[in-house]
Length: 406
Image 1 (cartoon, rainbow, N blue to C red):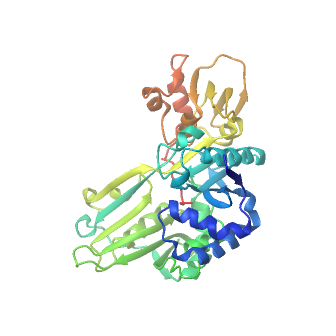
Image 2 (cartoon, rainbow, N blue to C red):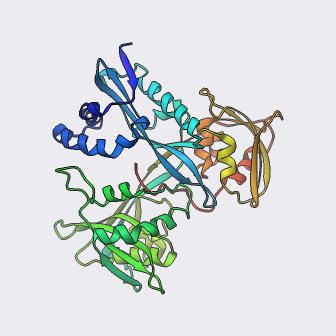
Image 3 (tube, helix red, strand yellow):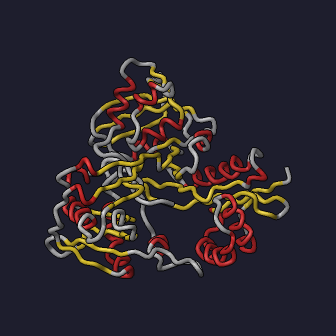
């Protein structure tokens, strides 16, 4: 095979971005500007970027970034966040993604990452690499004129984008630890998301922001939003981000979104599947979940580290036989868990159930029940009652949700 898998060099940047844009159906017109911008961001750590090069021309890409992943209980585990995965349409079915993925996962194991995570563009691709869908997200649409939402009563303040960078970051960091699936957001990502750091010619985010303050005057929530003028009957407010560290901030920020004048429709994408929004208004029938889909995919790399890193709502013991052709999560493990803590160690005891690494990834954050996966033939129960026991152990009180897209 003439294709070489390696880290790109700085001089590869423009060609590397051209290949990525081609695969993601993006226009090539900003390649030079985007290449310079991208290289400035990744140059300190090009070792986390992989490319497939055919006689010097980029035909594939993969990059990983470090994350702290919130797990049940509010703790975090180190996660390898995979992104920018592409293979040129001229070079499919040649094992290029397999080669780049193998390099990245091996490096993640060497670093000590407990899990690897990604957001999949297609469902069928990543199961072969041990990833399972772990969290879901939903799109919501509100008929503002019919829900009868009460006006906000909390202390709300409109702020500039620069002010939001200062005021919002501590709130986000507080809130992302309150639910499994939360991800840390570094300063560079904050600036990119707010449009304060962007490539030449990129307009960036151009919306409005409001913060909520608690009784002591401290910011405990914020909302980023945009408005689009329609024909008067479909003037739409889009919630780009609503982050709240308290229930009060959550309620008041939603009520603010539902109170903006001239708006008839409020919509939000990539939100939690268990939003409390329908219960905040007099007529929740006009709050509709218009779409629900897989979001964060997860692959366990270190079973003991992953399972001891999270909390458990009840006590129990189960022997897990994990099947992983790549070997990272393969083995038999004894999980002894309780609300006071957990241990997970390799064992030679007989397995209570056998499951592939994909199923463990789907169940790890509590987003999918092993009983559901067993009904689909993905989990084998050897000891009667082992699947319900494991389900109780891995269960969570709130649906996991990834707090950002990467």
